[in-house]
Amino acid sequence: MKKVLFINFLVFITILFLIEFFIRVSFDITPQGISKGIRDESKNPIFNFPNISSKKVFGKKVYTDENGFRVSDNFIKKDDTLEEIFFVGGSVTFGSGVTQSNTFSGILEKELSKHKIFNASVIGSNIENNLQIVNKKINSKNLKNIFVNFALDDLDNLNNFKKNNIKDIKKDNNSSFIERMRNNRVLIYINNFIRSKSVTYVFMKGIFLNSNERYYQYAINTFNENNINTLNLIMKKYSEKNKKLKNKMIFLMIPYSFQISDKNCNENDFAETIIENKIINLDLRIIKFKDKFCNDDNKSQIFLKYDPGHLSEYGHTLVAKILKNEIM
Image: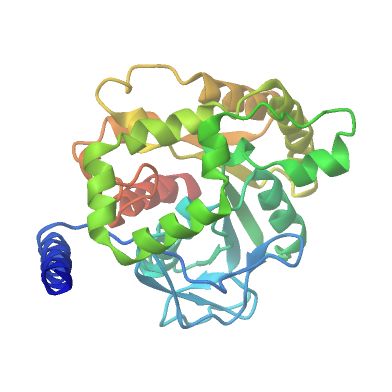
């Protein structure tokens, strides 16, 4: 009996390996693992460790310079007299799933020879941490622009800012079951381990779970009264910083894949509208990409396969093209 069970177990494992192999060679799917030791969470702001050369994000090698900025593997410093452009944001701006040379900041670095481009983004960074990056990590005498990407899920986990700046706002303890499961450490570890090793897992989630809509809805649910009050304070600080920088800061708003489906392209996003109004009312600039993505002939190729929000190489190329016109 034990021998039969053992043989059945071996057959089962063999089938799983064959399925994994077939999906890897048949579909352009990226594993979604992130190596440990990329982010230094002991400091404020949370930022990348300097001089990284042996880590991977979504299967792609990651390199950083002595300042913690993401760079390509063949990075060559440019003349210090050139105008400098910084990109600040989370995993989308960081370029999860593509090499630095294929991110929109990397593409612009190659195409704009008269500018120095820096990818000052950090996986998991939000609008609060991005502000700290702008304040503490960017010190340029030849600054042309700072582009800050505002993701819809940036209102998630604003606990540090609330703690330091809004003493009269109470934390919402009525979190949903899904949110509690999402924050369960054991489940987080299991999910991260499996998705970092198996493209089959990513494939099955993409087929059977509507992750695009689920991630978008989760982000929208963070637009509650407490978070919006916190956002108001943060955006005022951005406005103050922008004045000191002589209006050189520009916000980006890159949508989720769910937002550019045929059904949703003509729908107004109330969350995007809230963000846009706050930015404009503070005399800050913003570039929105939803309409540009919706009107692209190859919009199905803009995001990584079965990924709700990270750009593919094509998506980064499209963003770089749009930004190049803005910069020039």
